[in-house]
Length: 449
Length: 126
Image 1 (tube, each protein chain N blue to C red):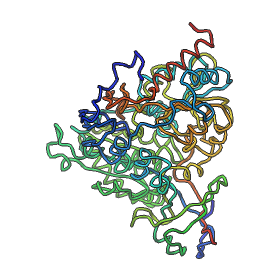
Image 2: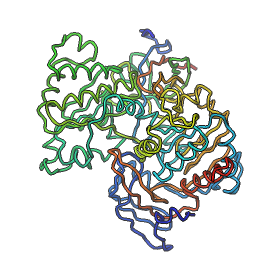
Image 3: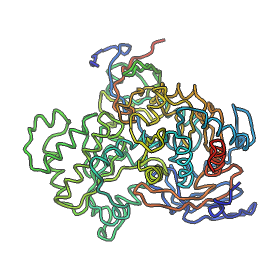
């Protein structure tokens, strides 16, 4: 079920009973967006996903076309047309409508969602606000010294993971991008690289490290500023440093010496920084340290992003509104204010009075006050599967899965756009189709031609 | 929140809770959030073996966690893998339990404090 505007992304036809191979398919489970997966498809089932990691295999091999209706209104099966009408009515009658999610949708659908938010003078926010939103704030304050994952693979001889556990969250990160590849300037691969892992717990990733530094919980900011001071040659009190961070000053001194001596350093940082007290201040400290290190050598920083197209959501919302997430249009122009226009806040503070969630599950992932308020307002939910969020929605659309059933564009965690190569068609509409139809009706209700 | 040093398992004691991604939790998202694998993973609290021994807790015990804003959840425990958690720290996979322990306030950031939260642990006695 594909509209004219997305037909170019449709999968090639399957012949019943025959095997079909989709080469270089793109896995959209995590931000690595590995685009070298060979899928074997038979009768609308993926039976093999060559080169996929454990998370990618679970993503591809468990994909079954959901036999739920494509549209439910108040929990009862309804036609898509009725669903579009009801959705548009909900979005245009609220005084504080919110649109949230988008990190598991292609850029083409994200773009339509931003348009709807603009038409209805609503607030649009993405799941970035509850993952690397604080880093998005820090980028604006400090800037970002960045690089592509290809540069990491070819040049990165000092790889630091801070508050991130890629062994479980991005299983191919080490082998495809950051540690194992034999690169243009690293002919011996892993042997040419130094890996440092900084975390509050000894995660599964720690096994991959040459140096593992276990800091006290909630002391990332202090540890990062210790390194900033050492980079500047400032003398520090060893007793104070160890008491605050749980790590001996000599360990930080040794790390700083290695950081200054490397040719191309990279710090991948995770939600160990952004979800902990300090949040954007922690990310700012890390980005400032990265900037400082460029006085001595080339150093870059990249957030390890979770969802397949959360980076695309940042890009699309930014190029449409000027801001990456938490954007309010109530005055007819875009305003950005994390803590006010971010969805955790608009829900927990009881401000939103209607909404639309796209490819996300706030009824499972948000705080209890936010969940309770969401349950009390009319909202539309788009998801590929039944979730706590779709169960409580006034209108629930079952949509095709991006990357498996539909094509489009996603952004890898290093802001590189990657095309999707779908495997087979779904009986359900794409989120692009659903959003486009809702947008048409919203414009009609608002008298926009 | 002061740390209470208690020898008895059913007396409350403050820990730092770190929710996070695990392989089983990540796979469970794709396999089905209502299936047993995902539900088991997000509803099992990992406790350092040293703390379990000190508090007289055993694998499968049920404990009550109270969050910084008074949120209360109940959860089964299992020992953390050797050396993965320092004593005084708990781990649970992202999911319903960890979300219930988050507060509604984001401190002007959009992000509720979701890691490094103080929780009070007490054993549920029959």
